[in-house]
Length: 436
Image 1 (cartoon, rainbow, N blue to C red):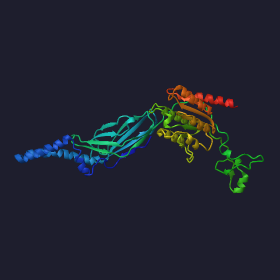
Image 2 (image 1 turned 90 degrees about the vertical axis):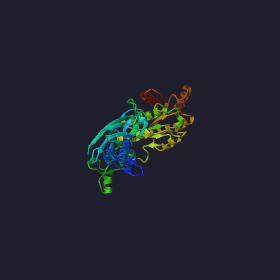
Image 3 (image 1 turned 120 degrees about the vertical axis):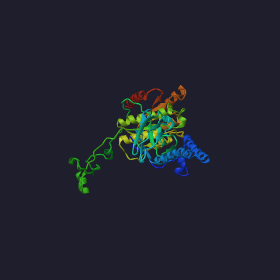
Image 4 (image 1 turned 90 degrees about the horizontal axis):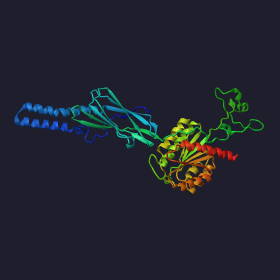
């Protein structure tokens, strides 16, 4: 949940250069202008006919809209608003609740309030509310819901406020300036709890050292911390440094996985929520979410060379890293690239672990690049967008990817990713058995 965010506190954004009071008179409705005209006409008739009572009627008719202008002008800048969004991040198809709070900080009651919050077209029609007058120091709260079938980042606001007096003489508008952001993440598909591989050989800190045949001279110790077992004290380093040093604990490395997402525009023939590209993005998001939950160390790479988390990023916990990758996938779009060479360059250093590719159309040149990527991985699975080429051509593309050492599976519209995921696990297991 995002905290209540002020939707605006200063003067209205729609006031013109003539000054706020003169601009307020521009808010007179047809009824208000008619009352002013009738009052003026009554005053003229009273002067011509010499009827003082008619002058009093004219003054009353003209005073009513003028009084309404002054009252609404005094309360418009004293009405504040705040907005909260719960939750601020949702998966495609899920709802977000938006809570609006309007406060009257003036010493006089407000008039009738009409609220309208600006939302993008894909989130539905603009929500509108009518609020009765708010007493001095009073508050009104309203809630509306929005949802989107399309991933992305959408602004909510700014809030527009229209005040009207009970007599319908004046309507004044005010537009606040602030807005909140709702992030719609890609749709996540549940995947079966099968392990595809990606286990790293070696150990974490223990990979930095090896026990020497003659003893433990190669151990890299660290400073003693409160609570460390004294049996792990490394006395030789302690005598050398003059402070307690202990042997490092050997920690196994996490299983690693690299998810490759092909975003090239020429790799996909359609667009929209049900397009092959959106299925690829959803598949990548599902794989990241599933593998993170299984304890994998996951990173995302695209054909443009974008790497998330990047090499300069500081390691965070699983929740933070998952959110980082998911938010990247929420806003990712097509690239103008034509090859996968930038992705290969981004992964040039280090082991890819398990390599999962969510790919568009794969050419022979792409297969050569993917072969180079596969050589730095413990296993490679390619989910290739299906339904974009004639069946014979798609079969040939899958075969070229298989010859490059990948387990190639079609990403068929309407078929759950979980079925292909289980098939990938079987193919990788069969490859491991064959390699032995």
